[in-house]
Amino acid sequence: MTDGHSQTERQRMITWQDPADGVAAMPSMSGLEYLRSMMGNTLPPPPMNHLMNMTLVEAGQGTATFTCQPDESHYNPLGTVHGGLVCTLLDSALGCAVQTTLPQGMGYTSIEIKVNYLRPVHAGSGPLTCVGVVTKPGNRVAFADGTVKDAKGKVVATASGSLLVFPIA
Image 1 (cartoon, rainbow, N blue to C red):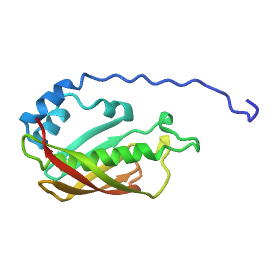
Image 2 (cartoon, helix red, strand yellow):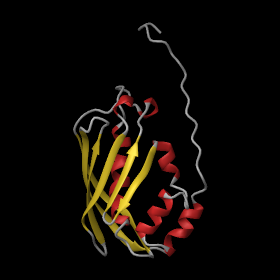
Image 3 (tube, helix red, strand yellow):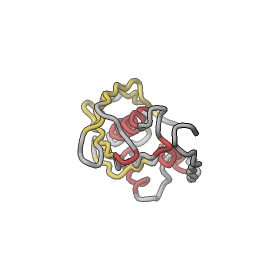
Image 4 (cartoon, rainbow, N blue to C red):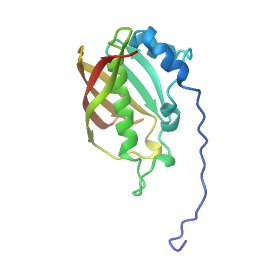
Protein backbone atom coordinates (compact mmCIF):
# COMPACT_ATOMS: atom_id res chain seq x y z
CA MET A 1 0.00 0.00 0.00
CA THR A 2 1.19 3.49 -0.64
CA ASP A 3 0.30 4.93 2.79
CA GLY A 4 2.85 2.81 4.65
CA HIS A 5 0.27 0.49 6.28
CA SER A 6 0.59 -3.21 5.62
CA GLN A 7 -2.39 -5.34 4.76
CA THR A 8 -2.51 -8.07 7.38
CA GLU A 9 -5.35 -10.54 7.15
CA ARG A 10 -7.23 -11.00 10.37
CA GLN A 11 -9.66 -13.74 11.14
CA ARG A 12 -12.23 -14.60 13.77
CA MET A 13 -14.07 -17.90 14.10
CA ILE A 14 -17.59 -17.86 15.53
CA THR A 15 -19.08 -20.98 17.11
CA TRP A 16 -22.46 -21.37 18.81
CA GLN A 17 -24.94 -23.93 19.98
CA ASP A 18 -28.24 -24.69 18.28
CA PRO A 19 -30.67 -22.04 19.60
CA ALA A 20 -33.68 -24.38 19.23
CA ASP A 21 -33.30 -25.77 22.79
CA GLY A 22 -33.56 -22.30 24.29
CA VAL A 23 -36.47 -21.29 22.09
CA ALA A 24 -38.33 -24.48 23.03
CA ALA A 25 -37.77 -23.92 26.78
CA MET A 26 -38.84 -20.26 26.83
CA PRO A 27 -42.65 -20.75 27.06
CA SER A 28 -42.31 -22.92 30.18
CA MET A 29 -40.23 -20.46 32.22
CA SER A 30 -40.57 -16.95 33.57
CA GLY A 31 -38.33 -14.43 31.83
CA LEU A 32 -35.98 -14.22 34.82
CA GLU A 33 -35.74 -18.03 35.10
CA TYR A 34 -34.95 -18.23 31.39
CA LEU A 35 -32.15 -15.64 31.53
CA ARG A 36 -30.64 -17.20 34.64
CA SER A 37 -30.69 -20.60 32.89
CA MET A 38 -28.64 -19.08 30.06
CA MET A 39 -26.21 -17.51 32.52
CA GLY A 40 -25.89 -20.88 34.30
CA ASN A 41 -25.17 -22.64 30.99
CA THR A 42 -28.31 -24.80 31.29
CA LEU A 43 -29.62 -23.17 28.10
CA PRO A 44 -27.49 -21.81 25.26
CA PRO A 45 -27.22 -18.07 24.74
CA PRO A 46 -28.46 -16.70 21.42
CA PRO A 47 -25.92 -17.00 18.56
CA MET A 48 -25.89 -13.18 18.32
CA ASN A 49 -24.04 -13.04 21.65
CA HIS A 50 -21.11 -14.96 20.15
CA LEU A 51 -21.10 -12.86 16.98
CA MET A 52 -20.98 -9.60 18.94
CA ASN A 53 -18.61 -10.80 21.72
CA MET A 54 -21.23 -10.02 24.35
CA THR A 55 -22.25 -11.91 27.47
CA LEU A 56 -25.21 -11.62 29.80
CA VAL A 57 -23.52 -11.42 33.22
CA GLU A 58 -26.34 -10.39 35.55
CA ALA A 59 -30.14 -10.49 35.58
CA GLY A 60 -32.42 -9.34 38.39
CA GLN A 61 -35.99 -8.16 38.62
CA GLY A 62 -36.19 -5.30 36.10
CA THR A 63 -32.49 -5.20 35.22
CA ALA A 64 -30.01 -6.94 32.93
CA THR A 65 -26.26 -6.40 32.52
CA PHE A 66 -24.13 -7.38 29.54
CA THR A 67 -20.41 -7.11 28.94
CA CYS A 68 -18.94 -6.82 25.47
CA GLN A 69 -15.37 -6.97 24.24
CA PRO A 70 -15.13 -4.88 21.06
CA ASP A 71 -12.37 -5.69 18.60
CA GLU A 72 -11.25 -4.60 15.13
CA SER A 73 -13.87 -6.81 13.48
CA HIS A 74 -16.45 -4.33 14.79
CA TYR A 75 -14.79 -1.31 13.16
CA ASN A 76 -16.51 1.02 10.71
CA PRO A 77 -14.66 2.79 7.84
CA LEU A 78 -13.52 5.53 10.27
CA GLY A 79 -11.54 3.11 12.44
CA THR A 80 -13.90 3.12 15.41
CA VAL A 81 -16.38 0.54 16.63
CA HIS A 82 -19.56 0.74 14.57
CA GLY A 83 -22.48 2.31 16.40
CA GLY A 84 -24.54 -0.72 15.46
CA LEU A 85 -22.58 -2.85 17.93
CA VAL A 86 -23.31 -0.39 20.74
CA CYS A 87 -26.97 -0.16 19.68
CA THR A 88 -27.25 -3.96 19.61
CA LEU A 89 -25.73 -4.15 23.08
CA LEU A 90 -28.23 -1.58 24.37
CA ASP A 91 -31.18 -3.22 22.60
CA SER A 92 -30.22 -6.55 24.19
CA ALA A 93 -29.91 -5.08 27.69
CA LEU A 94 -33.21 -3.20 27.44
CA GLY A 95 -34.99 -6.27 26.09
CA CYS A 96 -33.58 -8.64 28.67
CA ALA A 97 -34.37 -6.18 31.47
CA VAL A 98 -38.00 -6.27 30.32
CA GLN A 99 -37.82 -10.05 29.98
CA THR A 100 -36.95 -10.32 33.70
CA THR A 101 -40.38 -8.85 34.51
CA LEU A 102 -42.36 -11.27 32.34
CA PRO A 103 -44.27 -14.29 33.63
CA GLN A 104 -44.16 -17.72 32.02
CA GLY A 105 -45.64 -17.74 28.51
CA MET A 106 -44.88 -14.11 27.67
CA GLY A 107 -42.35 -12.66 25.23
CA TYR A 108 -41.31 -9.26 23.92
CA THR A 109 -39.91 -7.46 20.93
CA SER A 110 -38.47 -3.99 20.51
CA ILE A 111 -40.81 -1.32 19.18
CA GLU A 112 -38.32 1.55 19.19
CA ILE A 113 -34.95 2.49 20.58
CA LYS A 114 -33.29 5.89 20.77
CA VAL A 115 -29.53 5.87 21.25
CA ASN A 116 -27.29 8.77 22.22
CA TYR A 117 -23.63 8.15 21.30
CA LEU A 118 -21.48 10.21 23.66
CA ARG A 119 -17.90 9.18 22.78
CA PRO A 120 -16.16 6.88 20.30
CA VAL A 121 -15.41 3.25 21.10
CA HIS A 122 -12.22 1.45 19.99
CA ALA A 123 -10.96 -2.09 20.37
CA GLY A 124 -9.06 -0.94 23.47
CA SER A 125 -12.13 0.68 25.05
CA GLY A 126 -13.46 -2.57 26.46
CA PRO A 127 -14.71 -4.44 28.07
CA LEU A 128 -17.89 -2.44 27.75
CA THR A 129 -20.55 -2.82 30.43
CA CYS A 130 -24.17 -2.23 29.48
CA VAL A 131 -26.95 -2.06 32.05
CA GLY A 132 -30.61 -2.06 31.09
CA VAL A 133 -33.27 -1.03 33.62
CA VAL A 134 -37.04 -1.20 33.26
CA THR A 135 -38.56 2.22 33.87
CA LYS A 136 -42.17 1.08 33.41
CA PRO A 137 -43.21 -2.56 33.12
CA GLY A 138 -46.40 -3.31 31.24
CA ASN A 139 -48.80 -5.98 30.04
CA ARG A 140 -48.72 -4.68 26.45
CA VAL A 141 -45.84 -2.18 26.29
CA ALA A 142 -42.87 -1.83 28.62
CA PHE A 143 -40.22 0.90 28.77
CA ALA A 144 -36.52 0.66 29.65
CA ASP A 145 -33.36 2.76 29.73
CA GLY A 146 -29.75 1.70 29.30
CA THR A 147 -26.20 2.91 29.71
CA VAL A 148 -22.93 1.66 28.21
CA LYS A 149 -19.66 2.37 30.00
CA ASP A 150 -16.12 1.68 28.80
CA ALA A 151 -13.39 -0.01 30.84
CA LYS A 152 -12.52 3.33 32.46
CA GLY A 153 -16.11 3.80 33.64
CA LYS A 154 -16.89 6.56 31.15
CA VAL A 155 -20.39 6.57 29.65
CA VAL A 156 -20.09 6.02 25.89
CA ALA A 157 -23.81 5.73 25.05
CA THR A 158 -27.30 5.81 26.54
CA ALA A 159 -30.64 4.60 25.23
CA SER A 160 -34.33 4.55 25.95
CA GLY A 161 -36.73 2.14 24.35
CA SER A 162 -40.21 0.69 24.26
CA LEU A 163 -40.97 -3.00 23.89
CA LEU A 164 -44.14 -4.83 22.91
CA VAL A 165 -45.17 -7.58 25.36
CA PHE A 166 -47.16 -10.53 23.99
CA PRO A 167 -48.04 -14.18 24.66
CA ILE A 168 -45.76 -16.79 23.09
CA ALA A 169 -46.87 -20.23 21.98
